[in-house]
Image (cartoon, rainbow, N blue to C red):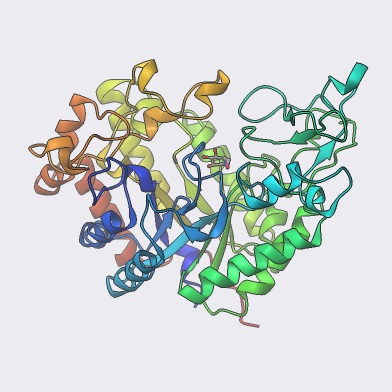
Length: 451
Ligand code: NOJ
């Protein structure tokens, strides 16, 4: 059964959903306690942001062990319990997977720093000598997505001056070298580890990353040697081949590729099951723009027989209720766009809090935590503020402690408990829309013929 082709996935940004132990940071037991809510909302599956061991420079997207749970979220038993309980509620569980990079505290990267030039330990990452006098300039002009150079120089070593290592995101997230077979073998091990524990699939972070053309000179502005290189499709074929040993599991790519034909390549029959469209989230509240985004995506995935999958927001972008305009106008437009999204054929991703119509929080600079902010870019913290559950409870029921990001006072008006009682609320609108989807099957693109 290709359940994912019309599934509604609910993104739980784990730090901000529910805290069960009072440390102010959301966790796995917290999610477990909200399964009743999620069933009432009517979602089919969860996508959990990374739950792995991490120093949390990028809230879990910097990983030191892909096969361990960070104690801040819980432990492996908590994962097992969450999966079992979610399944009992009829909800599947998918988890984020981050194959492009590790943390700079990962044992592999620490070993690389401690090993000589040209050693197998260093070959798992991208180390290069610098340019210019004494190698003081980075190897090339690549920029990091988080701002600044994509290269950081390691400290000087006994054997001589330090080399530079590549990081398409923060310097605490060195990029893995996907021409190294150990890197492939390790991902396969990670996939099987979680599949054996019963996860229903993976959301693959930066799925158009991994392979790069380090020595290429771009020939046009569309030509980005950092991303969307042909070799990345071999990685997705490997992932798919592993998943195919496990019935009904799904690989979903966060594919930041604008060109529709190139986007479609990720969902060919032996690659990802779904690739998350990013064009809808990038569109303004403008009928023509929205229509073009929808048509482009439908044509692209249709050309290879895949289902579309739609996302209005996630933990990296401004929330719809703020993005489409301030105050009640933004809220009304966000509600309208939710209906557009949920009426489209294919899968849909809801970001926790959007079902409550949360706006971005306007945080004071000193409260901001995002790694991007510390690199001089706009911070993504405003869309990551903890979820309000009940207006009368301290921290609105998110935690009994101090929330890791301050929750603005106006979130008191948007608590889930109050919205459940109000038929005119955004939460009620979402519930009804999801009910309508269930009552009108046919949202899925036609299934492919069986093997
Ligand atoms: C994309 C994730 O969505 C984002 O939150 C993260 O910072 C980068 N990838 C790096 O992993």
